[in-house]
Amino acid sequence: MSNFSQLVLTRDGIELQAKVQSGTLLKFTRVGVGDGALREGQHLNTLTNLINYKTSFPINDIKTQGDGTSIIQTVITNKDIEEGFFLREIGIYAEDPDKGEILYCVTNTGMYADFLPPKTLNSVDILLQLITVVGNAENLVIEVDDSLVYATREDFNDLAGEGRTDETVKKNADDILMLGVEVAILKNAALNNFTSNIFVVNFDDITEDEVVEGIWDKAGKRLAI
Image (cartoon, rainbow, N blue to C red; front, top):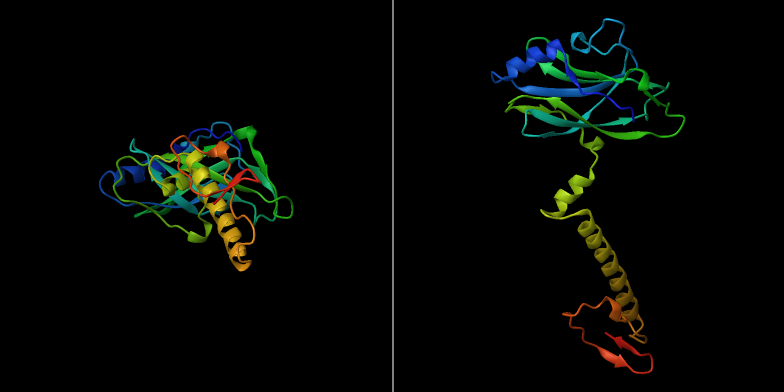
């Protein structure tokens, strides 16, 4: 993914931000992309639209940082792209109560743009997180298309519970998978009148404070549970 610089508030964005500080609702509408390059003497903050707009993607999540900024999340995909282009500019649009939809902030990577291929070539889905200024906005909303929501690793950790890490989440998933295997084995054994040993204990996995009960299989040198 291109190394985009910091998003810059446009003049329209600054004007809306002033209204937000007075209690106006800050409503982000979409993320637009294009392949336009800045001309000599042209500045990002003067733009009212992308230089060469190509398409838009819905915003699927927003998280406030507590420092006057928010992380806006979208997914850049080529599933509807008929003709590929260089992903050079990205802008976030918002609703102004007086002007309608405006280009709130924008960034441009210049000559370091990446090519977004058409859908007929390889499939591309990029989870993109953009940091933008929201000030002390108390009323911050987006329109979310639930069919396009992607979960991040942080989302899975949050779902797993406070204090969970990637390692504990993975272990829980492995434990659940193993439990499913053991249930399947038990079901099969029940249908066959328990004619064979069901579970075998691996003593290398037993901790010093773990108690395991079963019948010792002297011939097989193993514990049958």
